[in-house]
Amino acid sequence: MARFVIQHHQARALHYDLRLEIDGTGKSWAVPKGPSLNPAEKRLAVAVGDHELDYFDFEGLHEGGGGAIIWDEGTVEYPEDPVAGLQSGSLHFILHGQKLGGRFTLRATRANDWILFKRTDDFVDRGEPVTQTRPESVRSGLTIEQLLARADP
Ligand code: MN
Image (cartoon, rainbow, N blue to C red):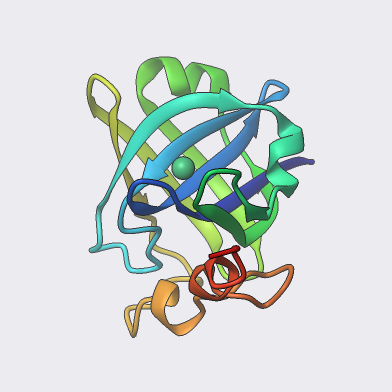
């Protein structure tokens, strides 16, 4: 079964990185506002370079500043060929994570810009954003702020 991870990443700006295992590599999108379980919340997702699958396990501080936590992880299913979906700019996937579940779509708009949104199913939550109610790492329980506070001054 293919894996996914969402890292909460402090680089120059704080953002989330969605990584989906497709064809043996980690296809990646930077999502400034993070994912939502509300189908009405369409989120910009900027395609960035592929990452090795090993990087799905990275949580920690970066040398020179910043760091990342594993905000959610689990397995991903593709109802249609994901390679064709990437090429056509319409990728459907089903997440089985600890915080996120159910059907999502990534749709290309222009150049590297995609839109990420939840599809309607039993996992929809129109209440408080899951990024706010559950900010912590699924591995360590640390928030990104708590992780960064551990950096040397
Ligand atoms: Mn990033």
